[in-house]
Length: 435
Image (tube, rainbow, N blue to C red; front, side, top):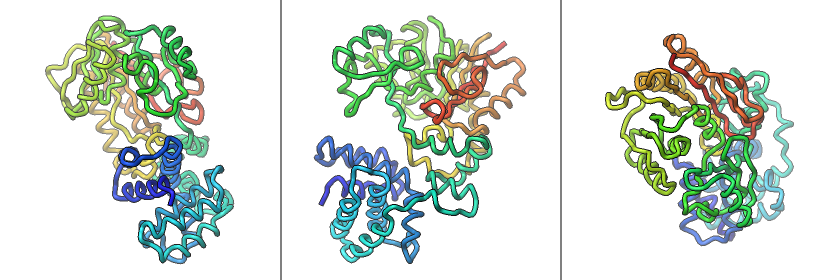
């Protein structure tokens, strides 16, 4: 029996019980002694199976006489992970994927299913989803790109001319990017340290940002313990850059945890001024204080606070960062669980986003700036929130942006990152200036 494949089936069963895939996998990997190669294989197989679940289930159902939903959950997980290997892992021979899947049946006390697993997986070899006929485009895109129909409808409505390309882009593996902590080390010296340590990196279009080519523990990257960098996506780094923070500014990060934008703001201040980081959950604020300590950022303080509720203690900030809660459509490649999330609550989410933005304006100093950002590409949560705010607040205007990332949409004002055009997270940034 292959322990890495068994681990994947165990993880799939736990996710089925409403577990978050990243937490489930991390826990299982920590509790098993696997080689680095086996961990990499298990990680790819697990996330791939979760990511392609709707496609895999559609294909499996084509070759089953009874509903997949009524099948024993262990057998279903074995079939899903086996089929993923056959269709999407070129380095795994079909016979090996089938033999290993059949071998897992008795391990999960499903010996009687060996013949079924063998027969179904053999029938699925060479299946081409692109040759299938569907009742409509929504169903076709949902099955082919393994996302909930709610998400397909949003993308098709907001981006009718590139909906399929956007859905394809949801399989793009995100770059591993970091921000250099120039409070502790210059960008030039940190790049030199990486070169001398034999670490490969690529410079990114946003200042002091690097893509690091690294597999393994983040703590193994040179400079981690010294606080020379922290992990942050390019889009988030850009959002803070767009704020135009100056030394000695007072900055409020209204939805701060886990802290990346607060850290970027503190670095932009060069440890002058102040950053007030808010979150309603005290345990999440600890992530910020711990991170700030490692990075040597002494100008960050935390406050337990709900972004949509006015707090009289928070007043007169030069810059306010509103990275509001959102549907997360833009970061689906990082969080495959979001593929299957119903979007029925989006309207309520947009109201919450507007309430947070409206509350933020009351904390702003004269001629101050609010950066509004989300990790979604849903226009109801982005452009429509901003348009409504400007309509109801004539003392604000949109500040023009100069985004250095190629491929962004509407580059001057409401900037949208689409993964298939930029290679980065789907993201939205608007900068509002009080006049």
